[in-house]
Length: 142
Image 1 (spheres, rainbow, N blue to C red):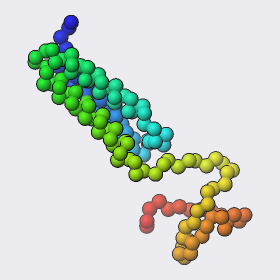
Image 2: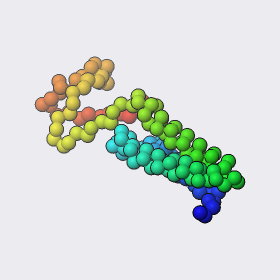
Image 3: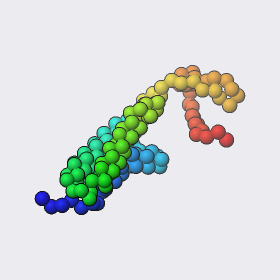
Image 4: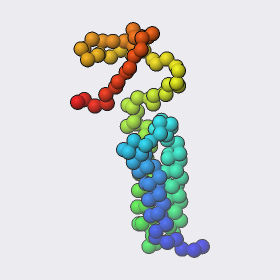
C-alpha cells in the first residue's frame, strides 16, 4: 500500500468546509441563494457529509503512519466539526426563518392583506378590488 501524503486529509477537510457552510453563507450574503435551496439545501449537506466521510476515512488510513497521525486526526476533526456546525446552522439556527414565499402567477388574485396608508388609515386589499390600484412597497425606511 502506498503511503498517504500529508495533504490528502487536509484537502478533504478543506473540501468539507468549502462544500457546505461557505457556499451557503456566500450565496445568502450576496442574495443569490435560490429559495428552493434555502428551504431544502440537501445538495450542500450531501457534499459536506461526503467530504467529511472522506476525511475520516483518510484519517483512519493515515493513522497507520506514525508521522501523519496528528495531521490526519486534526483534519478529520475539522471536517467533522465543519459539517456538524453546518447542519446545526441549517436545522437549528434557521428554524426561525419564515417559509419561502410562493410566487403568484400572472393573472391570479393577490392574497388579501391590510396595511396603513400614508395617512395612517388601515386599508385592506379586498376593499380595493374592482378599482384600478397601484401598490408601491418601500423596502427601507426613508
